[in-house]
Image 1 (cartoon, rainbow over the protein chains, first blue to last red):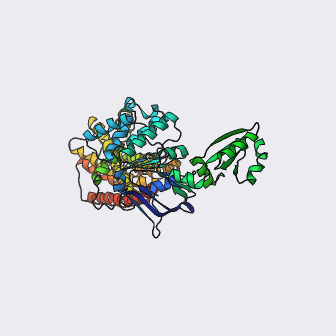
Image 2 (spheres, each protein chain N blue to C red):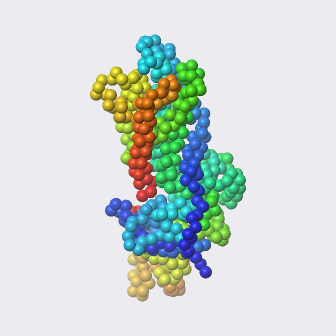
Image 3 (cartoon, rainbow over the protein chains, first blue to last red):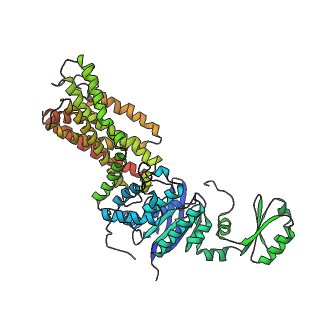
Length: 309
Length: 263
């Protein structure tokens, strides 16, 4: 039996005339990882902030947010006490060192001195920062800062971990390390809500994802469901402009064509057909692969940039 | 799924302490560069008076030698300046540049807790800065201990009072340069027209109301009474002014600044 950790119903948020979130609904089951995906300016961060009370939601009938039985409007403190938040921007105190940064946050949770020390020791070890415990923040790499912020979010052993683009700008090693840690946390019973622009990250971590665009839901489901329902199984990617003129034939035969400026993608469930097609395109650069979440994302949110991106 | 038991998140005092502790920790991290100037500045002032200006001012002011008059006034201006800097530039930088509050508000702290913690910290700095001035005054034998030891507490309520006004101003400020108007328009005039440098009793009639309306005047009266041990019923009015000012301006400061923290 899976419990619901977060329930969001018909939530909307306007900043003046700008609509950030519109009529959004989703459930996050306890002990799972839920991903909010969408282009920049889609409203992902705003939605997350509504959940921990940093943003207010617009009053309208039937809209409600519930986090472990608490309402962010009235029970802000309870939700914050149960949650850890990793914001998009690094906001460590530069004047303090690694351990001191954690200590000031331990005070917010009123941890006892003994608990604080044990917890900090454990978390520095968990995020592989023990060697840096006395280092000044200025001397940390981007990946170390990110890990320290995750450690800070984990101080109070949260039931819910909220991460806003936790691995943006990090190298593959750190990214994989963070993924491993998040998987471990999930195993230990933490519910995870994250936003990301990396579809492979969403695919690697999330049990369910919601793709949103301009504040609205586009599609949601498990990554496997989204792939199955929304996109052909294979894609042939062609680069180089000369390739474009050679592909009149597949259009007629029902292969879906997605033309970019310098690249063209041909989608089909039949890999053999794409292979035969590719064989005809002498000299063109091509790459045949299985479709992934990024293909779904681009199909769902469009290839063009909107005014918020 | 509803859990009706209140979750044991930390109580109010503990949350305010958390905010206060964060500021204290960051401030004391550079204790030498942060802690020394409050002691040096009054030395400079008093040396200037004692070695130079004081020779020309022989008349007593409100029954005090000029060095006593100015010295006791400095107890309050130091509290005013530190609380004002802390809650204008300091708060604005934490809010807009360092994004410190974004992190703090993700911990179990409400925007109200955060703003009031900010005020308490500014009050503490007021206490510390007027304590520093008091040390120098005592060292030069300008005030006598232990009766003047109450002065830092007047520094605390002065710091608190000025933090509310500074935070209210900050809630309006869109770019950091706007603070110049506040400093030139209100803080500097207060330094001169609140009975710190000279008594307000002989000011022209059209300046007197300004002196009575601004907060620093009332702090200065209180602290002089404390240092000279000359109490009068009049002081209850000054104390009342400080309390009402702090509560009213503090209320609006919290209300307005909150909208910039939780939106």
